[in-house]
Image (cartoon, one colour):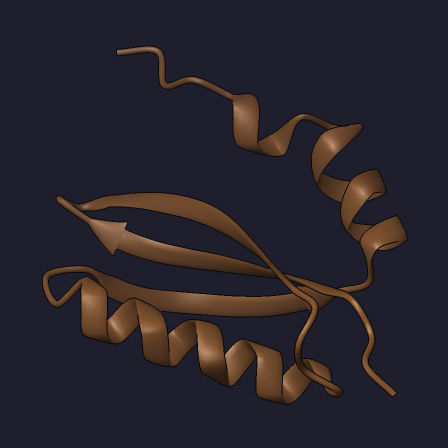
Length: 77
């Protein structure tokens, strides 16, 4: 059975930490979805360093990231 996961990827580029969200419909486990995202990221972004990867179910992801607006915070520079 295939489940839906949202993989959150934190990476460093130009000494700043960035975050990306990837949804996965094609993997049966969170681990395989996370490894696929890491593999794709490494092949497409050689100058960026992966710092962390986390896998969430859609309900948890929505509560953490959309309701709290974590990915919408702007730097005050």
